[in-house]
Amino acid sequence: MQLFLLHFAGGNCYSYDFLRKKIGSYTFKTYALELPGRGKRFGEDLITDKIEAIEDYVSQICKLRNAEPYIIYGHSMGATLGLSVTKRMEEKGDAPVQLIVSGNAGPGAKEKDENGKIIEKEKRYLLPDNDFQDVLRELGGVPEEVLTNEELYEFFNPIIRADFQILEEKEGIEEEMIIKTPIHAIMGDQEKTSDQIENWKQFTISSFKNNILPGHHFFIYNQTKEIVNIIARYNKITMY
Image (cartoon, rainbow, N blue to C red; front, side, top):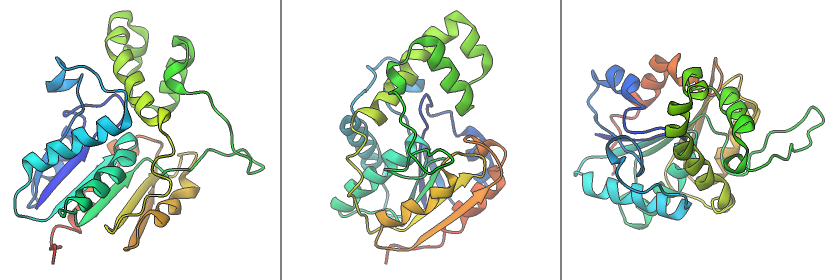
């Protein structure tokens, strides 16, 4: 069985090394994909358009496909793009047997205040550096050294901003999307939209499952065993 991993904002093909090591004992052929402008594709121009990013991932998967069933797993930005990638693969007649998403309550989910009112926020990719750095600190996952070292920050800044632009410029294109592939959603209990995890249910006509695990947005680093166990549940599924 093949497992395709879609990275979070600012990530690359190495972002899932921690997961690939743990899942090595299961019968998966694992592929950590990446968008242009980072990792092994550093020499390519960054993508800032969501449709281009989706098609880039679809192209990568199509080139790597074998005759075996496969799973798509995406965290955060990878979860959002994973929905559209799954839809495109369904349209090509080669759907995954499972879409697994984490760190994301699904399209349309918004952070709310204590009165249930949606908290309106500025587009993150347009924020001045000080505010942008504060956003990254709140999300976690970016070492403080990257945020405080001028050279490191200048290197990663355009990559992360490009990824946020992908998410924020065409934010609503998935909101009426429905796939036939089952969805399994996972979130950390400290994520501000974790109470909306069942939002994902409306995007599939197939089965839906979810788990809330301890941790913040990047809970995946501390809950790797649980993530691997969830993925491994689906390694006996066939496409027929």
